[in-house]
Image 1: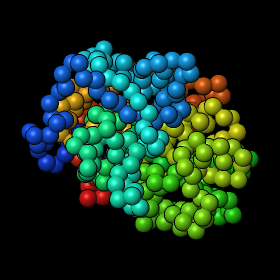
Image 2 (image 1 turned 180 degrees about the vertical axis):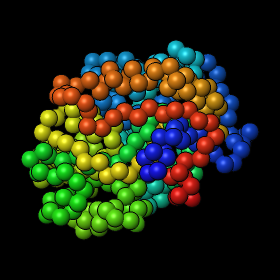
Image 3 (image 1 turned 90 degrees about the vertical axis):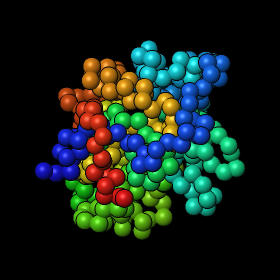
Amino acid sequence: MDAATVLLILGVIVCASADDPSSTSPAATLKPEDQPYIFTVVETEPYLEVRKGKTGNSKFGGFIPAFLRDLKDRKAIPANYQMQLAKDGRYGYYNNDEGRWVGMIGEVMVQSPMKTSVADLAAGPIQVTAIRNSVVDFSIIWANVTVVLVTHVDNGFDTVQDVLDSDHSLGGIDGGSSLQAISHEFKEPFSSMWSKIESDPDAKVADAEAGIARARKGNYTVVVESLYADYMVNKHCELKTIDTKLSVHGYAFAMTKGSALKPELDRGIQEMVSDGSLDKLRRKYWKVPCVSGQSAVIWRPAVVVAFVVSALLLRSS
């Protein structure tokens, strides 16, 4: 049984902290109704887009805002939430130079010298990793993802080895979870992929959009997550995916350690997965012009299994 099958059988993972949340944590109790909850988001197509001329939550469109509206209707999140863009537009990683967490993960953490977090919830396709799980709480996973390569069809690549055997540039998102996953795999072809990436000073890009833009020019192959690749390949007919067969971790929302939001949020996500609402939303927002037959990468909705420990977290801990 391969890793992809194992992860799909496990389904949704409850990413609870190993420690009991402190009763003194400001996040451990719900806010008064007159105090809004701040949900930090990142603009990434098709998950979230900023609409010009709009204000408040209505200025945000895409899959994530629709996801949140459904959760609100199910009373799984407070009605008085406000979405705001993450200041640096990052999902979240530990910045060694700054000595702190940045991105959405950093914004939902209580980091010195602050007494409270900047945001209450990070709403987006945030990959669950062991290191992130050590500093924030995660909701249950709402989609399983794999690592794939996106390349131009004219390159003639059909396998990972084709890319490795060429003088073609291979890269990914600087500080991204997919590159991190590859760097932790010591078997082939992943060790060779990582060596190729590390040997090229121009291999890494700031974000997924920049990677796709380079791939469309034909001289670059980018490492990204399968759901994002699915959307981009369907949108841009000149692109194709190559499956690495590396199943990593799923997408979840992140929140401050000990957050009182988690129990009802988990319930709402479980309901949406079980009744097909989440898959319906995905089909709506992944519907783009360049579709010929079945998508190259399929949507893998999570199947809720409570209190199961992720294979990734076991491997990384």
